Image 1 (cartoon, rainbow, N blue to C red):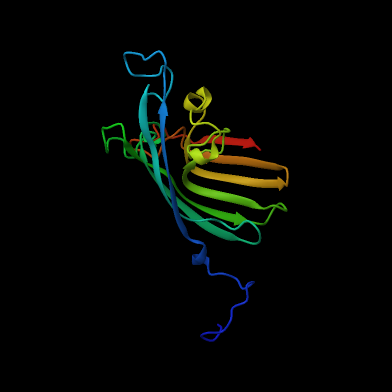
Image 2: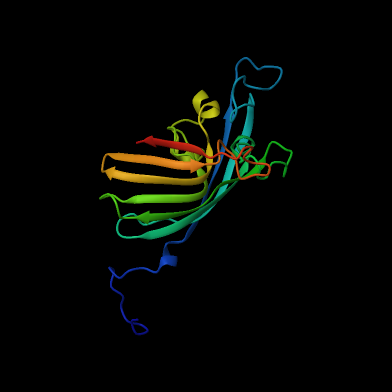
Length: 207
């Protein structure tokens, strides 16, 4: 331990807690429809379902300690809560189902712990356990990662948005990652009220 007032080397290792940070974002938008349907709805849409109306899509607060993947074993965590109209479609079945009955609702986007393990490949592996956004698909719930305000039909109806379980990402080499996870199913938390069967589901892919 350096003496009080002593200079600290820029290369000195930081304490684990020094990497904890708090951040957030806001997303609002407007979807115009020249047909002006009497229902006020854009047919076949979810996140931008209201025609010619403004929307408070998301207000998100993130409390996290990102895992360090540059060296040896390390672990971190992430908790991300969200409030907005998008939460009508992103929530886990069995969590906050009937907390609010308005267009703006609450959701937990992620509550997970991640460990980096440099054991089997040169790039190592990350094991994430908890509740987290799916690794599948080109679009994400977090709007900062998307090219467009609107979402594709596939994102709305074709892929899971979030998982409950464990996901292992293996960095085979600098070009290839392999994903393999055991989860409770599509957008479901644990029973009761969540997963409606006793079977685990597999989710995986190659990136």
